[in-house]
Image (cartoon, rainbow, N blue to C red; front, top):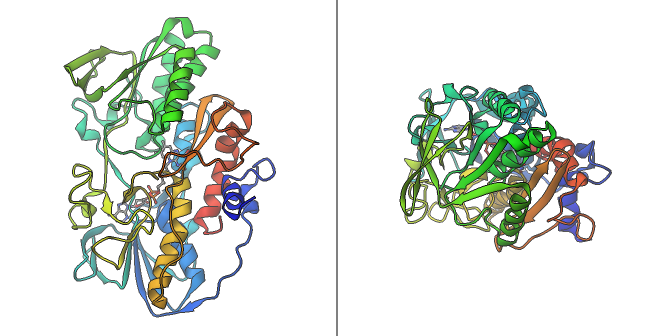
Length: 436
Ligand SMILES: Cc1cc2nc3c(=O)[nH]c(=O)nc-3n(C[C@H](O)[C@H](O)[C@H](O)COP(=O)(O)OP(=O)(O)OC[C@H]3O[C@@H](n4cnc5c(N)ncnc54)[C@H](O)[C@@H]3O)c2cc1C
């Protein structure tokens, strides 16, 4: 068992059935504290920012660490898929941002409004000017619902419209609309955006779950399932795409690839797609909408984004192994906002945080960093209530299973379901505390 694999197991929380994953996060060997008066600003107190703050506080003595985040609630986003299938209540995903923050960190409950990486200054929405020695940008991403013409969030839950990404109350409303479809039948239309997105397995999971629930309810004969996506394949990792294609075939879920949702007519229950052959329309009784996803505006205005890649999305230009900005060496990107080819999952954040921690400490100590991120991304791909495939991969699209020979990544297993349904949340919480 390699050290890497062992600690992945700790993150995935399966060491003894997964029920109390947090306790399996073996105490790390206490690294020596580094004395410094460095001034560190972290933008975003979500999965990445919170985990990093907890780790830096333990490693640094005398540093000034300031976190910026206006959001009172912390959202455990992997739980949204379960809420939108009626398997968990909305409050399953909600806690308080302050519950996870260590002593020794200053939280300013305001947004970063501007970033000047030349002057090394962040200005907050309340007008405070914060200078920094090191800046970590971890503000996640924004959902561009306005990009879907005819759609607005107040429609979610009515007239067969779901949008589970938008937050806990929308995930719960999504279940209301989806549940009606599982009972009444009709045409179910499941979509995903053309942009990069967090947890690219989630659109597939929603289609699989709603199909399974419809079948269990005895209503499968009344329902048609269509999955429409802009890409040419069902998943970014070819071997996984092929497996999903076969499962969709078995389950009677039809696919329309190279279809980008551009508009809905909620009254007529009709969706419009851009395709290489022009516009296409599809009728639906239930539609699941996941909008385009982009870096927050403050990032896109800051000069930190790639100039020649993802220009419509604005992800931060950084080295894919060190996550350090390529033009501003006092800046690191962490989490969903990072402009790297994989990694928009909480499981990726777990592997990115020690890299950014090491990068900052190495800079303080004026040495070369030693930690690198290899693109680890994990998606417990739920295929039915009680079954999932534990898909883990890296930058090279290689599968990197944490339990080789024990949990086959491309098999639908109950144990993999348990990892998502039971183990992932305590493990995520341990990560937030900087202990997984
Ligand atoms: C439906 C769904 C299912 C998912 N399933 C899984 C899964 O099964 N497994 C998995 O590993 N991952 C999953 N994920 C992905 C995972 O939740 C994200 O990848 C992870 O939360 C990213 O962490 P982050 O710190 O980059 O962003 P976030 O956790 O989103 O945090 C960003 C924080 O930045 C704050 N912020 C935003 N703008 C500003 C600003 N201007 N100034 C200050 N603060 C700001 C926000 O308020 C927020 O608190 C899922 C996500 C979704 C939506």
